[in-house]
Length: 139
Image (cartoon, rainbow, N blue to C red; front, side):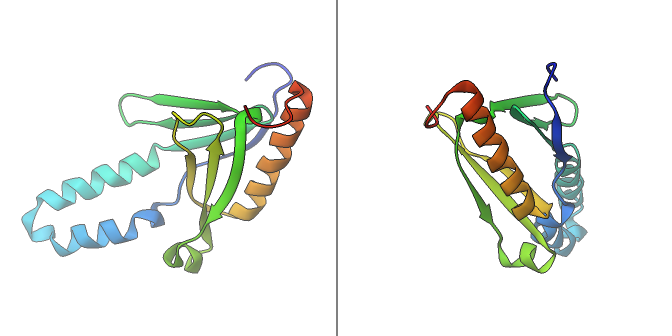
């Protein structure tokens, strides 16, 4: 983090987001191979980490090789909440962050608790960064 940058939130997706996948792997477990897929999917989820600071959103992925994607908050165009039924039952939701660059994909913060609260905090940080950088609209 840069001087003056404050950590707002850190977390990782709930393994519950992969319930359907794990269930299918267990059904086909006599074939043994699906168990390896299930472990791989669990580790992918376990080593997926999100961090939001007062200036940027960071997504870190990877089991052996780490990939880090950072997004400056003033570039965020829109945030939305996606809550499929199975996540809603568990009190989880996805926060979708759409950015100004059409060549880059949206960032999805998967299966987190209190997602509406996080989305609101993220929106406030985006507005603060836009004011600080004198950006009227995400460029």
